[in-house]
Image (cartoon, rainbow, N blue to C red; front, side):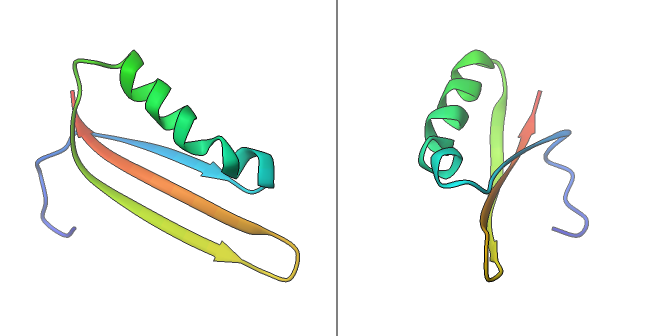
Length: 64
């Protein structure tokens, strides 16, 4: 993403617990609906885990 200028804001969603991961899509959809004037220009999905926890992070790049 080096040198990119087509966004001016970033929103990060992350979840570690099973219940939070299960509802993460609904949380993101609700946030998008609550911000109808934004234009999403890119997204990145990251996953990490260790012996005990599994984390998913979704990063949304957008222009206001």
